[in-house]
Amino acid sequence: MRWDELEEEPCSMARTIGVIGDRWTLLILRECFLRTRRFEGFQSALGITRHLLAERLKKLVRQGVLRRVPYQEAPKRHEYILTQKGLDLYPIMMAIVHWGDTHMVDERGRPLLHQHRKCGKNFDPVMVCSECGEPLSAKEVHTHPGPGARSTPAAKAPEKAKPRRKAA
Amino acid sequence: MRWDELEEEPCSMARTIGVIGDRWTLLILRECFLRTRRFEGFQSALGITRHLLAERLKKLVRQGVLRRVPYQEAPKRHEYILTQKGLDLYPIMMAIVHWGDTHMVDERGRPLLHQHRKCGKNFDPVMVCSECGEPLSAKEVHTHPGPGARSTPAAKAPEKAKPRRKAA
DNA sequence: CCTATACAGTTCTAAAATCGAACTGTCAAA
DNA sequence: TTTGACAGTTCGATTTTAGAACTGTATAGG
Image (cartoon, rainbow over all chains, first blue to last red):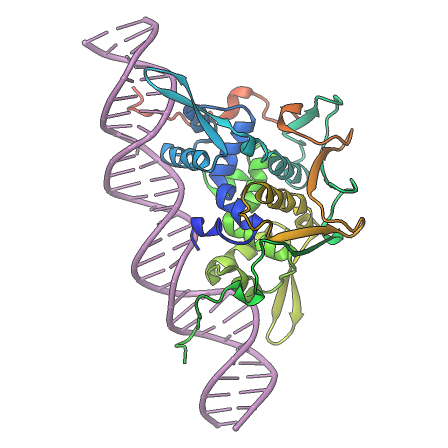
């Protein structure tokens, strides 16, 4: 399976993973949310190779997650700014951070605290049901096929037979 | 930067990425939440190579995200079950799915709908502030260093000078 | 007894991605 | 004229991943 195949799977998760599902992309996005905007900023904050950074930024721009905005002429230079589509990744970032805060901290505690401007308090992100407002957990959720699902269940992976021996 | 270095960074996001931040791991976890438990199940659902699948499962077990539970003696066989730590990844999964539902669907609509058992309705996951219950967005959140932050700001990446020329 | 199948891996080689370091090009400041 | 900042590009070496076959245990069938 290649990266670009992921984006065509009938699964919102696979498609999203096709866009942001790798280590460097996620770290680049972290920097974006921490207000990094420029090539050198990303590079020195992350220690990513310049080659990969250029590639990942290009991809994020192509996907509409970042916008490449000129900030100076001569020499032409650009900043990378989160689009609305990019800003909408915020819940994913927060969910990732929160899991780390819960399960991956050492004895010293959290590296970063989050304060909600509206209420002024340090908070944790909580995921709730849009309909009733109750917090969600895996066991309380039932999934079923939507309109974009594959029509036949047998179509799951029929393109190719894959015999492990000599195919008789 | 190697994988295992990520887990020691003073950043909950980096640490989490060290555990789940790759394509196959995320897809394996998707299958876990869809109730897949066995090696062959993962392999045929995902088309991942058996080699990588074995490796990723081992890593997830080592990290405490999955538990390897025997389900038959002779020959010994095991199932891979989400631990509580693994179940706690649910908000991340839902956030990823929801972003895909919002930004990556084609004209046919969502591949999968989610129904909340408690209220019976199809829902979207919404991320709210644990303190005031309001929905969160990036601009309303202020971050500041917590107890586990690096003490000196200059410690960001001082271990090694990295001259791009001959270091004069 | 012999063969086929299910399952859960392991092993191997070729192909692809990443790393690390240097190089390019433009412009400003010293 | 030289140096440095910035935003990349290029290239050889290393690491990961893909793809396919192989191993080992056990059951079922003939």
